[in-house]
Image 1 (cartoon, rainbow over the protein chains, first blue to last red):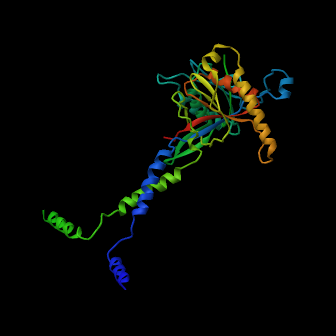
Image 2 (image 1 turned 90 degrees about the vertical axis):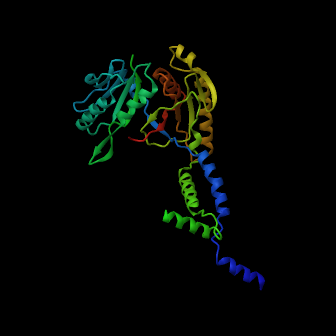
Image 3 (image 1 turned 30 degrees about the horizontal axis):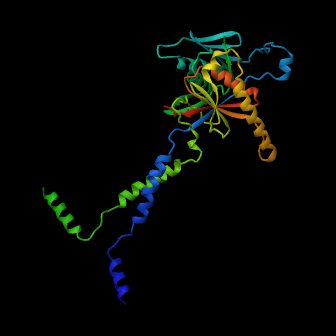
Length: 168
Length: 166
């Protein structure tokens, strides 16, 4: 008789007791904050220029270049970034005071992509002393471009099949 | 002035029977916890935060796979947490192959193949991830990549920090 009367009186004035829930949250929030990873690792896939058995047998002959085929070669050197189709030089982007002129490279590659829409492979040749960071930046520029279309950023793939090599 | 008076009067009356209102704090915590749980990943902590290993940033979207990992800092080369070679010594030679790294990688390849033979679900792909400091010269990276490909690790991924488009 007495407990029931007390309970009813209580229920009229109290909220839900949030204390256990608060305990849980106070413990969980710092734990997750500590373990949270704000830097996400990503992977850049590269293709090693591996000579196949047939190619090796044929000797070090350069592949026969067809009329409308692109053999895109991007060389990173001190005097700038050279874009070439086989042996034919297309663009030379000289370095700016702040580093390599990546926007110019991107522009040249976009023009090439529009001329050869089906081409998707590129060879990036670098000097031995080029920093890894520079190489990754050039690879990014070669791989894709972000253009603003109708006020929206859109991603366009340029040459996604990248091989690396060294130039003397 | 008048409203202030009224407020303080109300508080005085209310404080007789109410608790501290925790609702907004609970809302805040709930949102924070949900956000952190959403971002929580069990494998995300695999980024080594070594002092001498600053990965370059890239726009690459591809998520890395758990593979054999070669770490190349400015002073040492590690394979799966074990120091295998010295960068200065590697850069001093004209040889493309790094013998110490090759030896360890051969062992890794052998082990990978052995485990691949035990199960049918997995095959040995020869996939390897190179985590390189952003200041290492290309010559060093090339040597590491060459050694990897010589040791049957032909599928090379470069580990980078994901950068958002600005």
